[in-house]
Length: 51
Image (cartoon, rainbow, N blue to C red; front, side, top):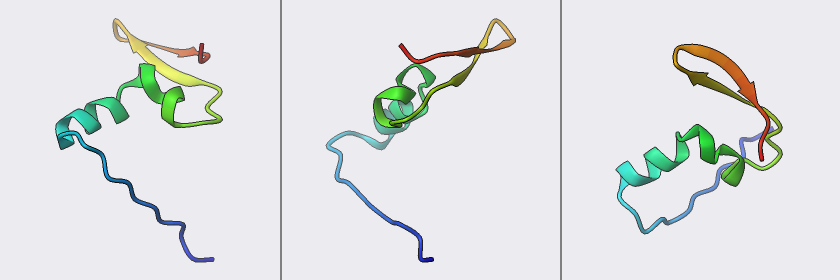
């Protein structure tokens, strides 16, 4: 099966896009179907359900 490839033009600097895409608090905004995320807080690993 061939891979599914898509692209989008985003009118932002690469650094801004990277910061948004790697911010765990925003994962459920762009990764639909996400039901759980891992959170590291004060060196402690935990899990959080999306709001």
